[in-house]
Each structure stands twice: as structure tokens, then as C-alpha cells.
Image (cartoon, rainbow, N blue to C red; front, side, top):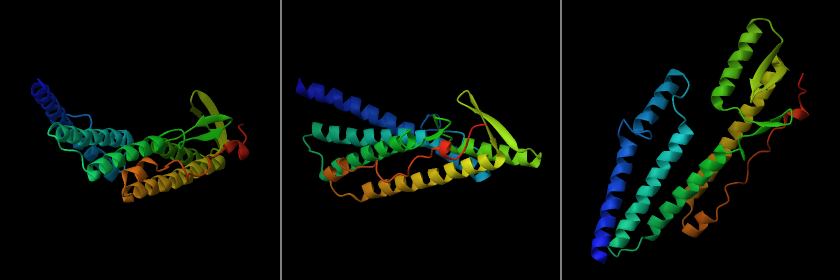
Length: 215
């Protein structure tokens, strides 16, 4: 009976693994390599990303993590215990996924303006820069934009200062995130990976109420 159960479980695991490997490769998958290529092609052309790279990377990492877990489960069915390296690899993938989640969250991506928490992704900042340039070319002095259903009016120099400050903050955060990723990659034990604190080192969030007054 146990052999039958193990045989069925092995088949299910192998089928799941095959599906995950296919998902990472085929051009009909929502997490396939083709989406990565489309993003890189768009960046070469200087156009907006057609897909959310951070979300795509997170889902692809989750698929790879599950493949590693399946390999361990299959080995256990054959009476083989996972090696320290396998356990370390899984711990690192999980920690890297946690770092991605934290980096994409309001724990990092947030500033305050007129008492409201807000964030502008790269594409929004790029569009805002273009709007500022268009207003300057038209000889205008102020600009009104709506975010989260609320309108904000600033002078063009204030808009520029805000965008530059957010760009600088985002760059600093990216540096910290990459530093955490690198540090995790260098860890040599599962215990060290599990106890690693990736929430430290980020710059103070910007509060524009200290600098600008909403008109």
C-alpha cells in the first residue's frame, strides 16, 4: 500500500515539476522566458516595460523554489535525505523572495505629501518628467497632477525637486536591496540565512510636507 501511495505521489510531483519547468520556458506561459526578452527589447528601444519585471521575477523565483522543493520530496521518497547544500539553496531562495517582497512594499516604496502616503514607480516618474518639460516649453510656471484621486499643484521647480528627490531615494533603496541580496548569496549556513535581517539600512522616507506647501 505504501509503495502504491509513494508511486502515485512521485507521479504527481514529477508532473508538477514538468509543468513548472514548462512554465518557465514556453512562449505561452505567463512567466515564460519570452516575457523577459520582451522587457529587455523594450528597454533597448527606450520604451516602457510591457510587463512588470519585479512581479515576473518574483513568480519565476517561486517556480524555481518549488522545483527545488520537489527534488527534495522525490529524494525523500527514495529514502535520501536532503543535503546541506539543497537546504541552503532553498533557504536562500526563500530569503531572496522575502527581500523582493519587502523591496516592493510600502516599507520601502513610500513618501509623504500633503499628509498622504504615496509612491511613484519608474514609469510614472518618467511621465512626470516629460510633463514638466512640456510645461516649461509652453512657458507655464505651475502644474497640477492628480494622484489617488487628489489634485496637487506645484511650481515646476518644486515638481522637479520632488521627482529628483524620489529618484535619488529609489536609487539608494535599490543599492541597499542589492547589498542584502549579495550578502544572502554569500552566507554559508541555513541558520545564517534564516536569521538574516534584510529590513535594515534603508534611507529615511521623504516627507515633502517639510519642503513644499500644497497650493
